[in-house]
Image (tube, rainbow, N blue to C red; front, side, top):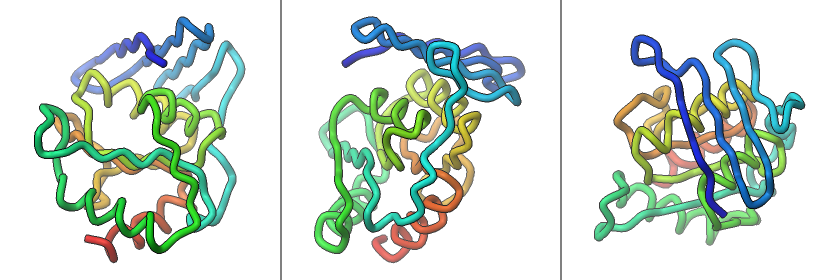
Length: 167
């Protein structure tokens, strides 16, 4: 799966995000303070409330990649998820999985790779769909950071507690 992603910035802040998957003809659109849509219909993040039984993207880049930061932290997070939870980890196209988080098809996304042109559109799409998106330290995601943790507010709190215990 692959997508075309476009973000319109004003004053360095994302105002519009368009993510299009040509193979499945899915058009995601987000506008600041106006919500997110999939093919013109409003979307929201999952209402799943238990991280331990959630479904999500868990992606970890490695030391040999151009993309990826906080590699040691994410090694620990992935190991802890694999050994201490019943989470279903689904690993395929990051943007596809993140779009599924925005439309409620997945519960969360945890990853440590991507550059601004990857992260800016997903940040607006996710936040306008009701997700919280931070980096591993729990602060709001900012341009220039490659890592992110994204989920509904309820799950995000659980994930951050889990992550802090892991790192």
